[in-house]
Length: 274
Image (tube, rainbow, N blue to C red; front, side, top):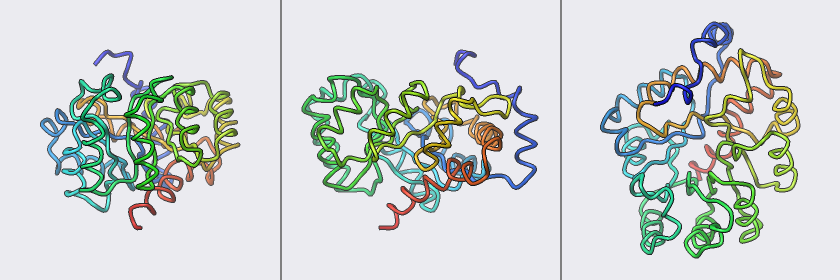
């Protein structure tokens, strides 16, 4: 993995240690993948051990293919919260929304297993209005599931037009600026945002002022996440949880607890219990 894609964990290690020493926060990780190449490198028992060692309260998992998610859920149903990713292989990231067999695949898995969301999926702009994504939005409505969308704001808007009552978790907060994220959250009451694979919201144990304003305005609408989009990132889950605790410690405790675990648990933990 290119070095520029890794969080500068060593630089934040001292701050993370300080945050951990004083009543460490549990973490609800809203963005983990356990795809076919990951379970070959990190078997299920080892993967669950890593998650528990990181102090994760619950973990939302989606995989390419879904068998990875089912392996982890079978190993630790108290820890794993399954999502259904519409990819059977990594190669479908940019093609799934035009696949003639994708709808049947989603319908089959939804009948066989329990999920809280469809996603995380990559979908941008007008592609959201294609027949396959439209059916996906309908399936989410039928099964009362979230949509976990790695999308631009345009695609988010289009999905809400298809179903004004849809519930969407915006992966990576759309990689958008905090001002735009706040604008979208103001507009859509059923939009939440995860902070996976972003380092701009906190650095050196301090929260970026623009992100602080977003978190203070919408303390109930954000969740943290890791994004193990390659197998190697499984070996950084513990460090990433500690890094998250470090910058969360710069927020008021009540807000930090919501972002760290209470928001995710209140929404997705309850869905697993229904």
